[in-house]
Amino acid sequence: MPGEALKRIYLAGPEVFLPDALAIGRAKVEMARDAGFEGLFPLDQQLGLEGLPRLEQARRISLANEALMRSADLLIANLTPFRGVSMDSGTAFEVGFMRALGRPVLGYTNVPGDYRRRAEAFRSRGIPSADGDRPDLEIEDFGMAENLMIAVAILESGGSIIEVDAAPGTEIADLAAFGRSLEEARRLLPG
Amino acid sequence: MPGEALKRIYLAGPEVFLPDALAIGRAKVEMARDAGFEGLFPLDQQLGLEGLPRLEQARRISLANEALMRSADLLIANLTPFRGVSMDSGTAFEVGFMRALGRPVLGYTNVPGDYRRRAEAFRSRGIPSADGDRPDLEIEDFGMAENLMIAVAILESGGSIIEVDAAPGTEIADLAAFGRSLEEARRLLPG
Image (cartoon, rainbow over all chains, first blue to last red; front, side, top):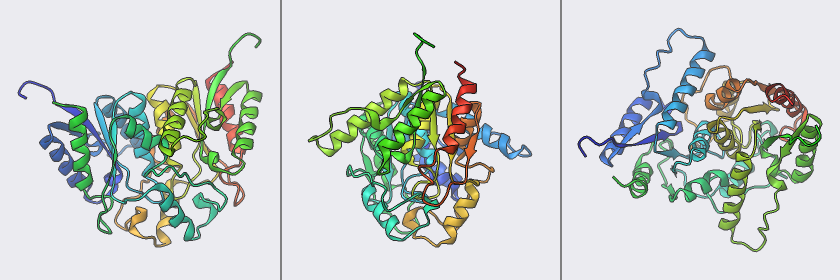
């Protein structure tokens, strides 16, 4: 509506590490706008990091992302497995951050199926113990797509974990499930 | 000091999944007490979950942990890799949660070395794309042990990521680095 500020959605996920991250971010922001929201994509920020020491670059990115989250009304997290059984750890941090602020968090994954099934597949490949698994380690079995802290935060927000079976190689980038999370956001934050 | 409430530390980490989780929790709580703190170990709570549906069990555990974090002055996270390149996703959620509350978060890992090295080792094993890696995916390279959101939260708290090289098989459970995080907690929250 003219003159009215759009509700702001922080777009969390590991697609920031894709070679076409900026294009994917723009696509997410555009889908968010079509749904009536302002999408906040972390990489979009102009931070002027060139020439700074690595540690200072990391510090500025982190603090800018935290400020962006504090300015957001809701977060949609890409929970797709990232280099292991679980989602990206930075995204998990961000889900917890927004949850502590009392704001809704929604999520989707492009690798369907519950945590238990993925952890069993990971274990069956026989991995070194430095990768963080042992045969006697309990596997969480609540029928949820992710660790219960993440999954319950989403359910308690009034959302669900949207699951889509993306084609191999497109798991991190596919946006079909994201579109359905935006529909949940419209229901939770009506215009 | 008699009559004075001890500062409370939330003990976050994947050791809740070990078969001897309660014993490890008790050991952490005892070490925390020796350092002058009350340690809060998630599994210690009496939640009466028997007979409840799985989803309701998960909900109660999550909400109890969130309440426990809100009651804590500081969090120490076990960042040791868990079923992949990164830390346990539930622990990452908890680091973000406490960070948003403006409380210090400290961390340790029993698998030394930076994120980049671990991600390269993971990639070199040739994994299916459903495990969340692709050859063209950027690997974060800030010389930090974890994703920058996690690592910077710890540094900004005034702590460091304590690294110890634990023996194979003891990576998740070893407590030497935890003891050093407690020393940092004493510096940050003096009696």
